Structure formats: C-alpha cells, structure tokens
Length: 372
Image (cartoon, rainbow, N blue to C red):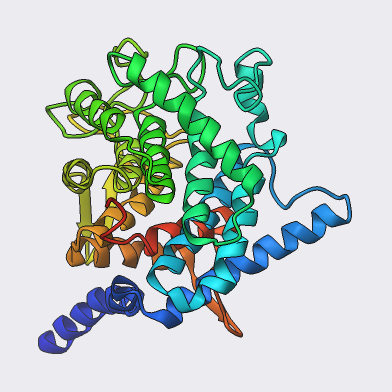
C-alpha cells in the first residue's frame, strides 16, 4: 500500500509538468506546425482589425494596448519570415500592415497627453525623448527588412524616427531618453537601440557609434550591479526612480538581442537568477535584491513575488540563448495559464487574448541571430 501511495503521489506530481511541457521542445526547435498555427491566429486578428476599420467601427484594440499588440504581431511575423523564407509572401505584407497601425494617433494618445499635447511623430526635431515611439520604429524596421513592397512613405517615417533617436541618444550622457516627462525606462531605450540596429540592417546605414554609446551607458548606469537587473524607471540623469525588476529586464533582454547580443546575454543571466520553480514549472520573481512592491502595468499581477509579465518575457531570451531547461520550465507555466487550443489551422492561447498571443508569437519565435 505504501509503495502504491508513493507511486500515486509521484505520478500526481509529475503528470502536470509532463502534460504542460509536451510542446516545449517543439517550440524550442521552432516546429513549423506550432509556429504556423499561432501566426495564423494573429493573421486572423489583423484581418478582423482591418475589417472593423473598413466599416468605420474602429480597430480591435486602441491606445497603448493596440500599439503593443500590433507591434508584437509585426515582430513575430517578421521573425517567422526570416526563419521561413517560403512563408514570406504570406506574412511579410501583414507585418507591414500591423507595423503601420502602430503609427495611428490613437495608439499613442496617452503619451501625447503626457507630453502636454506634443506628438513625437509630428515633431521629430523635438528636444524631448518620446522613447515610446521606439515600438513603432522597431516594428517598421522589421517589416521593412522582410517586405520587398515596403511602402516608401513608411520607410521615410522610420528614417525620421531613427534619425531623431540617434541624435537624442548621442546627446545623452547616461544613454537614457524620456518616455514621459522626467521618466526614462531602460526597457524602452533598449527598444530604441533595437530600432536603430534593425534600421541599419534594412538600409546599410552605419549606426555603430550610437549603439556602442548606448551599450556602454546601459552597463554603467542602467543595470543594478547587485542583481544584474535593469532599474525599472529612472530619470534621464541616471537616478533610479524604482527598484531593479525582472519585467523590465526580460523585455529589455529581448530588445537588446536586436542590437547587442553580448549585452542581451548579460541581461538574460540576471533575469534567469530570478527564476523560481516548483514541480517543473518555472516563473520569474519580479523584484531583485530583496526589494518588494506591488504589481503594475509593467509587471502584470504579482502573486507571492512572481510576475506574470516577467515570466512570459523570459521565454524570448531562454530560446534565443539556447537555455532549454529554463525555456521548458517557463513554457510549462505559460501553457498551464494560457490554455492553448487548436481550431482548424490556427493555434491560440485561449486565456491570453490578442495581446498575449501577439507577445507569445514574438517571444516563442525569438531567434539566436537577431543581432547581426
């Protein structure tokens, strides 16, 4: 009886991890069936958004949530187009459409209000940072990289954003520029660097000086040496306004992978130190170095110190740097929480919604050769 009880407990402990991790290796290897299924789900999202706009009822998502959903859709589809050139004709034009939507005024309205009505798109010579526009700038760059029919007007818009960012970053002794007045986020600035780097790949323009300046200052100013995590919020003067946190570090590691692979690896190392695991399920602790705090828009809900967002973000650097063990443990948690489901040729994480599926598309297809 004792042996039977031990066996039952063992099976009960191992079975959920096995079940939720059954697709982890396939995703880690970039299995075309999984990748194609999730990509088709995001194509359906973009098609529904196009239809709503055509009928005058507005997009599926607006404000910064729409910005994030369309940006990550564009990044994921562009990454897939690089990995699978045979799919480029299908996915690259949708990547361009998704990237173009990130420039719509309603996607940045909260930021325009924050800058007292100044729109960073229409005032490219502004002395202010407007670092949030790195999200459309990066999406445009990746679409431009894979879409032979990328429109000239969008190319000109991306050129203008990158030119402004290069000037602002080189002028910043800390390598920080503001997202909101008085508030700089190292994560957003990593996206600025990513946008600049991808622009260089798409156009052949040499941006090495500004990228080297950003990388030096990120190492010197923006990383907490005790934890290896970036400070979540800072002043552009380099003073910390928040604790070092995993959610910002995880997303920064993904963005840094487009610009500086060694730096992205260092950020990933700090992030993985915050992993906690139980019964084969991995999750990321939000606050490093003994700091504590509540959840917010960046971290998502924080439960017993664990961040929903940081856990999802960890999938990208785990895959990009070949850390199979971390990827598998974290994927199990994403699978358990997301409830993946197939419908025809589409695959979606049922509980994730459009934003979550767009994020997962980008992170689960994040590859080892983004920074070149």
